[in-house]
Amino acid sequence: MRPFEQIVAEHGAVVLRVCRAVLGPVDAEDAWSETFLAALRAYPELDEHANVQAWLVTIAHRKAIDATRARARRPNPVEQVPERPAHRGRPEDWDGDLWEALAALPDKQRTAVAYHHLAGLPYAEIAAITGGSTDAARRAAADGIRALRRSYPASGGGTR
Image 1 (cartoon, rainbow, N blue to C red):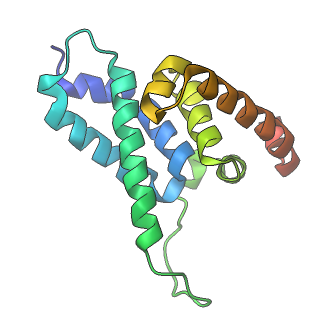
Image 2 (image 1 turned 135 degrees about the vertical axis):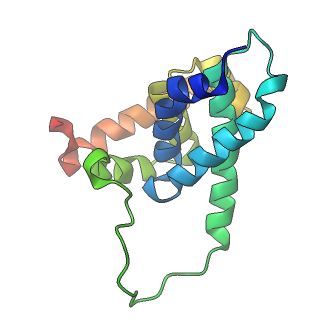
């Protein structure tokens, strides 16, 4: 079994991109950390032949659900907020326009796009993670990409 540090180095960037695509920049790094903490605990039990990336995306999916539920329990924002640090994480490596276009997608489309196009998972793996069929995962990803093609270039992101 490979050292866990190697797993983090190999799959960390993909998991972070998936977390950002599903949750947005505010909660993504926390979900990434929670994903790898949970993975570290479960890693000794992982089947030697398991698809590690799919396993990590499954854990990230569950952490995203936890983060979404936690977000729903947070207090409502106020009109005037005190001065605070940037809420988008590291602006130099984050495309806010793309996030806005992703955030506008329905949950199923957003997760299917993130898991397939960012994590590179096959539709069967996405179906296993999200609980739908392979065809539904393929349809959701295709619908999501079609919607992004309509909305993302309109926000100026098509030329990047």
